Image 1 (cartoon, rainbow, N blue to C red):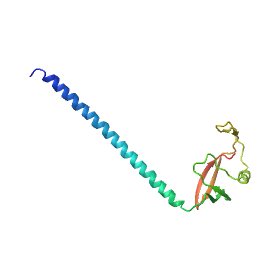
Image 2: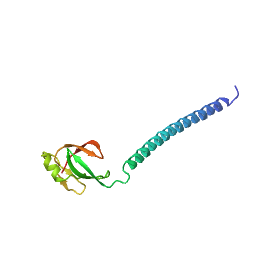
Image 3: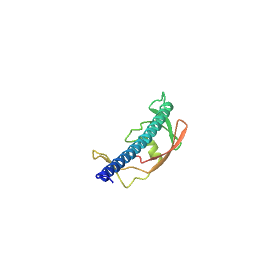
Image 4: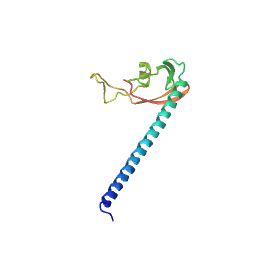
Length: 132
């Protein structure tokens, strides 16, 4: 064997091993990018479907809570859903033993829990709620 060829061979093996590791990293990043793109497309499709369903809708819809008519303001980013006092009073709900407190320190004692069956646009859904 030629002098110094063993160290040259070792350097070549290390170089090839480095390439293999780099290829594996890039494959993993590529797979993550593909999954991310698939999820992004799925979210976009869902958003388009929701926009089509809500086209030309107002912010207030006629709804029912346990068979009682009540107007509902639709706001998916709301911190709190407001139900008319008459709906809460008609349910004869128990007072909770815990409180909801906001960042300002304001606290409220909720009533419930309540599971309302609501109908919006002919679609019936179960709504879990703690009226205050």
